[in-house]
Length: 161
Image 1 (tube, one colour):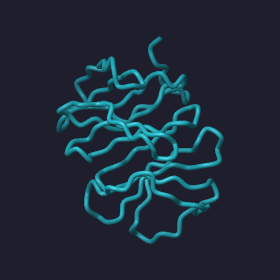
Image 2 (cartoon, helix red, strand yellow):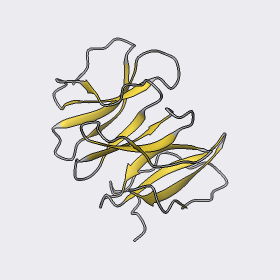
Image 3 (cartoon, helix red, strand yellow):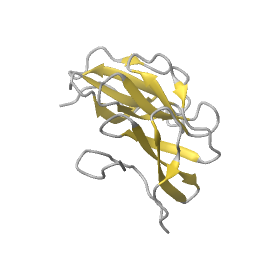
């Protein structure tokens, strides 16, 4: 089923269902230029599309928390991909990471206490985990090849206890 009526632009990507399955959060690129996305939310039937971010600075990869109260996402608004969190209505947008490397593709742990993401430069990306408030950043992979797109608690990897 097609939920949006857009042509090539805007381009919609990286959708995630809300825990109650009533809403979908996603990124929308308004043009072909890199890092121009914003995070949007809509009803599951495609109605009531509303932006949650407004600066068109690489706001991407949104994921709902398991309780549906918060959304984690990546943003380039400070000149480097970093991890941010906001309330489900777009309020209280808070930067969680402050690293020189590119931090991207955040995912909540099933209990909402941790966030896993990939971080790195050029072709060397590894997985990291941190507390939901941005403290306690710990590298969890050290592989000779890059690690991308983590998934937790969806039948894949369980977070450390």
